[in-house]
Length: 299
Image (cartoon, rainbow, N blue to C red; front, side, top):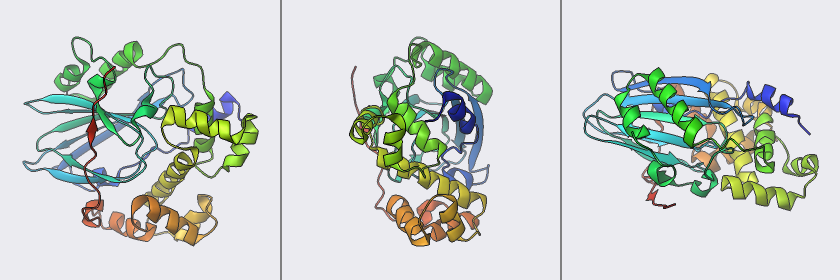
């Protein structure tokens, strides 16, 4: 069984889920910046990925986003309006429209545990931020929109999170341990070994995990491994996929290709070629990926 210190150390080498479409446009079209920062000292996965992008054109841009084992909080604003929403774990690719002359400030914690709301309720969904957390007054949404400086926005959000989002009475749960276990192994761990490691039955582990994360342990494991493949391919898109398969715990090249296509809708070779050519994923996908619906939930 991993100790807290071992997990915390391994988390330093974790790779954040990457959305390639945010990196293929020049700055005069889609201006992008990112930063890793402190999130929550109570959770072992205590780092957070902040990123921000702006559509500098007068027309909409359609992005195709890959499945993501993390949840996100997205603030969207321009000169006329400001809004925010919570995007749960996404187990399939989907399309998203980036509005003209609009800025997006995004917060992606590595863990969805240790919060004052159960974010597992929103797996494969998007909900308005105000239906999950109280924006307070003055509204954190307006504060983010008014402070267009990236570092100031991060600081303002961190202060709001400490007071409203983080559950200061939280202690690591079985579900988070399972998530950490799979993350440390980069998705290569066997689920039956996880059960024996925790001394709980496999059925109980699966139940507790789905209650907290909203998806199955197997789906989460596959998403972690998928994102490990994406990271490896983006780092060296010309490498042999057999090497990627071996690095990511797949039995062989065919196993990797089948799993990747089941999740992303394309094989990893095509994915690599699009990245080499700096082409957005949408240039390959047809209209089978629709816009994610917005659901309303009152508390």
